[in-house]
Image (tube, rainbow, N blue to C red):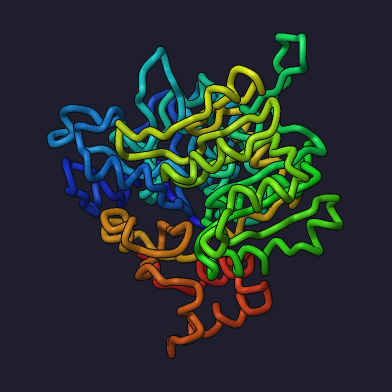
Length: 426
């Protein structure tokens, strides 16, 4: 699709120089070393973690102290094609192959990660240089799907997969931990109608440890309606799962209502998808015996806390886990289940844009409603909500609206291919 000669090393990228200082720039990349790989980025989805890095600058744990003098490329949810491979890696990696990256390297104990710490690798770019440590750690992952955006969603999806694997349970009289949610058990996803919650619903319905009852709560009826139109109660029943969507805002006693759905036995697994004190406390209150509360949501307040019932901790073996990102195995699983079309995380995406839209989108991310903001790094397109395409008089947008209408108004491979072929190239 794209061609580059070895001597052409210019890239366009969004670089971080300090707090709230993001710049879209064109600059020269150096010739790759024997242990590096030159790659072309096609898609990158914007994560709230990038917003946090942008507003904190060098105060962020992963951002270098000298970022003002040596700026880094942002973005860590990216997918693209390998262009040129250094001598060390030529037997394992080949030009033209699609790839995704597990950004949580943990290389020699360092917090450095693509999208936060490196001058030449990040998702908000046209071309990047992948450093040796990414390959050494097995974090450069081959991707064989037909759409690049799936590769970009593999990282956020891996966080969801990791959370499901991180839950654990014990049997009375045994100290052996059985990892994962309880198969055939009761699972609840609280504040679960946002973009990551949708991915969690998808995985629960199609993973190898399906619950018998899956309850999804939120206080936004519009979000719940969208979720229920994508992951329907009927489809869930075909998967062997009883799926319930509950608006807790409309209930006088939501805790009692949620427990009643389990015949007052409580839930084996409860995931909290918003860092809100009453939501955490509700999660604790609906746990059954040996129930596991997974605090998935990442708070920005370092002093965030909530009350837990320690009587239940002692006598009912309730317990708490927290996950922050997935590991490489979770990433590989995410890529595989997307390639096989076992899951379809397209519901996460509510906006698309070009590289020109990265700076304003990242700096204003909390103020922009909806789910994932998907960026195609080789085109120029202002960030656009999917439901806005139908309101445009632009022929490109009109055709995209028609494609989306055929696909339950979800982003899809056909929409991606049309956009890449017809949008203004940068």
